[in-house]
Length: 89
Image 1 (cartoon, helix red, strand yellow):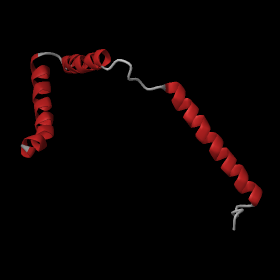
Image 2: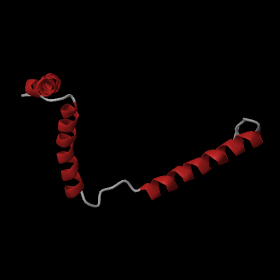
Image 3: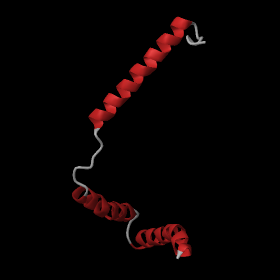
């Protein structure tokens, strides 16, 4: 069973090249991109529909980044005040 799982990525690459070659041979090269966009649209649409309420909370990410930046600024200021030596030693 594991061998089938390990065989999937190379087979996907080979299949992709073959399908693209067929598209280019019988249609124009643009159809390869159209097929890829249509193929990708299905899982993206399903994900948007089925995964409701699970999104990246940009506001909390910005707050975390600002808090980390403030901590770093405080650390830099403390090091410059002590001349780079630790205060506890």
